Image (cartoon, rainbow over all chains, first blue to last red; front, side):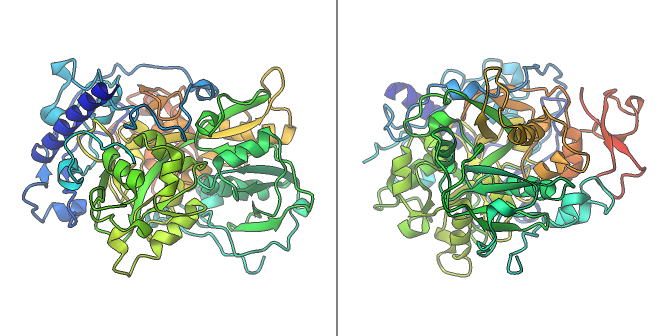
Amino acid sequence: MATRNAYAFAIAATLSSLASMTALVACSSDTSNPAPTVYTIHSDAGDAKTTSEASTTSTPDATIDATTVATDATDATKPSTPDAGSDASLDHASPDAPREDAAPVDAPIADAKPKDAGCTGDGGCWRCTPATNTEFLNQCTSAACTPFNNFQRLPDYDGSLPPLN
Amino acid sequence: MMNAKPNLRLPPHFRAAYSPGACLAACLAAGAILATPSEAHASQSCSTLPGTPLYGAGGSAQLPFLAQLGTQLAKLSAPISIIYSDSGSACAGYEDLVTPTTIGGTANYWDGSGSTLTCQLDPGGDPVTFAVMGNGPTLCSGVTALASGFGQFLGPVQPVDFVAPVQSSQQSITTEAAYYIWGFGASSASYAVSPWGTPADIFTRSASSFVNLFVSLDTGVPAATVALHGTVESTNTATLSALNALNGTSAAEAGIGFVSGEVADGNRSEIKVLAYQHTGQTCGYWPDSTAQAFDKLNVRSGQYWLWSPIHLYAAVGASGQITDPATASLVGYITGSVTPPTSVDLFAAELGAYTVPQCAMQAWRDGDLAPLYSYAPPSPCSCKFDFATENATKPATCKTCTQNSDCSTQHCRNIGPPLHSDAGGANVGYCEVN
C-alpha cells in the first residue's frame, strides 16, 4: 500500500510540476459542457491575480495563456439515476481509525497514465469523455485554474507524505 | 421576531439577473436567504408555529438549503414549518433520528420572511422525523451501515470548500497541503505550510461534522486528528465568522478553514474560496469556472473533487416508503418523487442555496468521494442552470426556446417564466442536450 501510494504521489508530483511549466489546453469533451475558450493559469504565489488582472499583468513563471482545442465527443455514457441508498452500504473505514498508511484516499493509481494518446491534449488534459478519476480531474476545460506547487510550498516535500505523529 | 436578523444576501449577479416576474422571484426577489441564524428568538415555542411542524436535525452545512425551502414552505396556504436543530453535528443529527433521541434547547425555523429564526423546543424534547448530512452514515464513527428501518434520499449537490479570509491573497491548496495543515496543525516549522503557520488561525470542526469527515476522507488524516488541529468551531457559520474576524488584521493571510459551499458562496464578501488541486490533478480548480462565478461548472463536470449530494434520512416501511406523511412530502419535494405545490420552486431553492440540482450534473458518484462516472440526467436542466447562473461559457447549443424545433438538440425543456428579464416571452424553455 505504501509503495502504491508513493507511486501515485510521484505521478501526481510530476504532473503538478508540469502544470506549473506547461500551458494547459482548454477543450471540451462533452457536448453539454461549455464551449472551450482560452483561459489563464494563475500563479499560486501570494500575489495571485484575478482572471482579468492576469490578462494584463505578467507573472513570469506562472501566468500562461492557453490555446484552444475543440473536440466533438458525443459518446457520454448514460448511467442510471443516482442510487439513493448506495453509499450507506459502502465499507468506509472509521474516520477515527488511522488508515494503513495515512495517505490520501482515492489517489489515482492505475489510471494515472493516459491510456489513449489520442485523447491527451496539450499539457496533458483529457479531451475525450472521462471514465476514470484522473480523466475527470484533468479534463480539458474552459475553466480557470491555479496550480499549487507542493514541492515549493510544503516543507521537505519529496513526493511522499510524512507519517502523522 | 422583531430582532431577527434578515438573511437577505444575494450575489450581485443574482440581484441583477432575475426579473421581478420570474419564476424565481418568490424567493430571490425577496433576497437570498442566508442561513445565518438570527439573534436569539427563543421565546417562540417551536410547537406553536403555524401549520404542520416537521422536526429535523443534522449538520449546519445544509442550513442555507433548508432556509430556502423552509421559507417557501412557510408561505404556503397550508404552511409547513421546518424546525431544524444543527446544534450537534451531521452525525449527531443522524443519531438523533435513528437511535432515536429527542432534541431540546433551541432550533432554527423559517417564517417566510427570509430570515432564519430560532424557537424553543419542548421542555421534554421533540422527536425528529428527518436528518440531514452531507455524507453517508458510514463515515460517522462507529456506524457500519444505514440503520435498519431508515431510508437514505439524495438531494442537490454541494461542494466542500477550503476557504480563507477574503483579504487573503492565497488562491489554491492541494490534498497534500491539507494533509500537512490538519495532520500536524502547524505544530512545528517542519510541518507548517506558509502562510498557514499559526495554529490558532487554522480552523477546524468536530470529528462528527460533515466537512471534517470529508477533509479526513480526502486527506487520509483521521477525523479525530483533523479536529485536534486548529481552533475548533461549532458550525460552518462559526468558521465563517472566525475567518471574517481576521480580515483587517495582520493575520488575514494566515487564516484557513473548510466549510460547505452553501455557506461559503453566500458569504463571499467575507471569505474567499480556494481552488482545490486533488492528488493526481495538474491544476487547482474552483467549484465554479472562475473564483468569481457561481456556475458550479467544475462540480458539475467532476473536475472539482470535493462534492456530495445532500443526504436526507427518514424512517421507512417495508416497501421503502417514508412512514411519516409530512416527512414523505418534504423529502419527496426535494428528490422530485412528489410534485410540490405550485408556489414551491425547488430549482429556485437549490439555486438560492448555491447547490446544484441533480439534473444539472454531468458527473456522479455512488458514495462519499467515490469514483466519478459520466452522468446523463433523464430530464436535464444544465442549460437552465447555465442561464440562471450566468455561465459565460455555456455551450453554444444552450439557448432559450419555446419548442423543440428551436433547439439544435431538439429538446426544449423546463418551459416556464423566464429566469432573466431579457429572455423575452411569457414562457421560455431551455435547449438541453437530451
